[in-house]
Length: 586
Image (cartoon, rainbow, N blue to C red; front, side):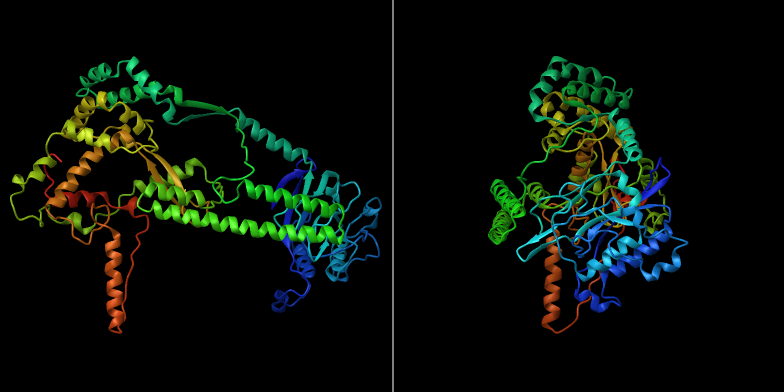
């Protein structure tokens, strides 16, 4: 990881390296030319050092090397393979280590350790573990029932030592390896971060979210401002300016719900719980973890056999306890999923609660997303063959004008339809740009039904679509691949929930018409009542069984259209509607 211009007054770069070296006699070395992982790392570092000659290096990792209490300049010489490069690189200088002494709890030196300390000295690096001015930095970094050792290190170029504030070996129970932490004081780096944070802190973030606990306040505001009379006034202006009426309607609701607007300055704070109610790790697990930490601290203070065995047994009990807890938790979750299988909302709530999501951050700015999605939605591909065919119905053989479903399709929008559309509105849905929530419409359904009936009828009769309804908030949802590529994001459009009432009425009429006249084939199972993709799965399953019973092969082709909903030809869709004799008011 490269940090540019953070050292010496923004003149030098810092390169951070994290690494892992496989232990001595690991099977992986059977497949490699060298059986010493330190030599392999040293070769890679040599090439990197050559490339970034004037940069400083900070290295951290598990080197599986034990160096005991060897001092940096004790009986060390520069590796022979680097002698020819002394004009290019500044290597070992014992004067750099005259005031640097180490103390380690690990007294043993292994084969990798000797190679490791030779590598460190060759590149004028300093091992931070065990430096006398660092608190507990010489403690064991690996503690287990089979033994303790120091094999995890922080090493850095000697010029970086002046920036080191402290290095510690932490006491944790997640692994046999103890985490090691390092604090560097880089004034230029901190100054840059603080400036960015100060700029962000000055910004105010405004949130508007529906709160059911304030429903009574919202309805009271609507009554206080006489919503019914106000809508009667707006209804008279529908014929004059639809967009203005809708804007005033939305503004009334926004003003009535002002108590739900929250303004937050800065970043806010995040408080983590000691245990997560959404996982198996509950209060009992937390108490067991505290007991394990207590045994570990006791073992570190006095590493006799009694404390070592007590720690090993406590760790074993802790792992078994967590395993039993997780199994019981998984069993309950499976039962809950089966119980809510037919309720898609509760089912996916359970799935999202137990699914571990990795926090991913991209470097795509808003303008890039805007340009990309605009290019997709405004594409006008050449018309498909269906658009060149004559507009005549090939499906119906009777006088469509007398069909009840056709008459209903083109009739005036009724108040009953508006009431039905209001009754099926779902709660907890994200609004569009108008900030109208379904909860607002449902809580005032009695007052707004006459106004909505007149509004929808005017829009239907005059074949118009309000400007505000054509706007949407696009939320990019990452799918797969490079997180910095706009092509790998699915656009989720948050449109006006208000407008969906109108489109729901049209959809009901259209669905009734096509179902009554058997226009859709039985193979079309998606988005149809009393149909399911399970029907197709059953058909495929039956075909597979039949072919296998006759010892025959079955070849199946699956077609997956890329960005289907984003790139479908709208002209072709409307041409299909015309071929269904939808040539009247609808």
